[in-house]
Image 1 (tube, rainbow, N blue to C red):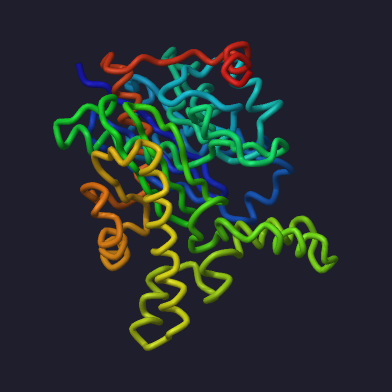
Image 2 (tube, rainbow, N blue to C red):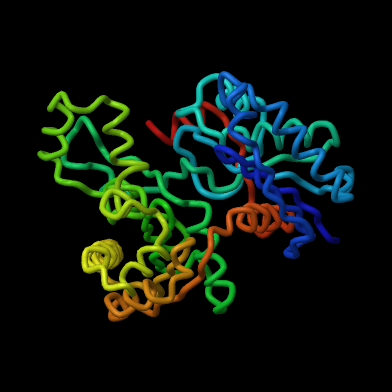
Length: 363
C-alpha cells in the first residue's frame, strides 16, 4: 500500500510544503509571505488562517486532492522538552502551542495547521523531531552554574534524519551506531548519537560561530558589554544571534562571498573562514570524548556542507576520529515525510503528547 504524506514547515516569511508518495516527492513548494502581508498580524498565531488557506490553495493549484492523503506532518514547534521521533498531534499539544508555547515561533503553526486540515478529512497529524527534542544524558546537563544548566536546542530534525539515512545507506542500524552529526547552516549545532539517542550536543550558543551567530564567546567580556550601558537587551541578543559570527567581521552571511574574498586576496576573510572551520572541528572532537572515541562515522550536513572547500578542511582535521560522510542540505521536508512514513509502515512507533508525560520527563 502506498502512502501519501503532506509535510508542512512554517518559517518566518514562508511556509514550505511537500507531498510524498512513500519515499518519492511529487510536490515541493515554498509559499512566500511578503513582509507587508505578515505585518498585518499582531502575532504569529494570528497568521494561522492565512497560512492554512495558502497551503490548501497551493495543493489545489497543483491538483493534489487532500482526500488522497494518508497523514499530515508539521514541523514540531517550541514545546517543552520532548523525546525524539513522532508525536501524534492532539488537543493537549494544540492547547500548549496556542496558549503557552515555550517561545512564540512560526514553527508552532506546523502542528496547528496540520491538525486542522487532518481533522477535516479524518486522518492523523503528527510532528516529527521537534525543535525541543531533549535526550541529554544526566551528566551532560550541569553547565557549571546551578542557575543556568544546559538545555538541548539543536537542529534535531535534520541531524537525526541524516544519521538515519547514513545508517540505511550503509546497512547499519541507527540504534546500534555511534555517530557525530555537524549541521552547518546560518546557525551551527553538533550532536552525538549513541545507539539511537542524541545524548549530547554543542548548541549554536556554546560552540562554533557561524555566518550569523556568535557561538561560544568569553563570558566576562559578554557581561561587561551587557552592563556597559551602550546596548539594550534586544541589541545584545541580536549581537549574539543575527549579527554575530561571520557577518560581524565581514558584513556578509554568505559563505560563497567569503570564499570569493579569499580568492581576491583578503587575508582577514581567510582568517575568519579558517577560524570557523577550526571551531567546528574542535566541536566534533569535543563530542567524540562523550562516547570514549568510539565513533562509527562523522556526518556533515546543512547548507554550508555544499562547500567542498569547507568540508574538505574539516575532514582533514577530524578524519583521524572516524570516517567522514558528507550529506549536504537542510532536508527538513524530506525528514518530516520520511519520519512519518516510518510510522505509517510500523517501522517506528509514535508517542502521544500529554502534559503529564512532559512533566514526568522534565522532573
